[in-house]
Image (cartoon, rainbow, N blue to C red; front, side):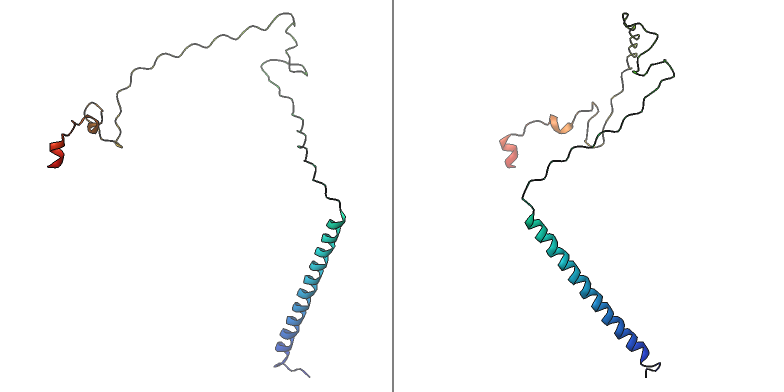
Length: 131
């Protein structure tokens, strides 16, 4: 007879054995399924897979503008086909911008004119280099 002292250990041991049995059964089933799939693959003829066609585009909903009435094709029903629609007026050119003052970057040193002072150095003679 199992008492309160041995019962937790026995239940734990039974749980371990059941877990091991389940794991073994799962592993056996997976191996068996893998073997069946390999056998089916061997029986099938080797043909390259057909390229997949792109899915068809869904139909686009019609767009409606409240500014001009249109028919199903999107054309203006009040316009006659023999007369071309008038061209929209050309946009006016924007006014020229005023000249901007020069900007100086802190990334590179500059003199009062904005030029790189290192670029205007006088060439050093061979005698000066030795000293």
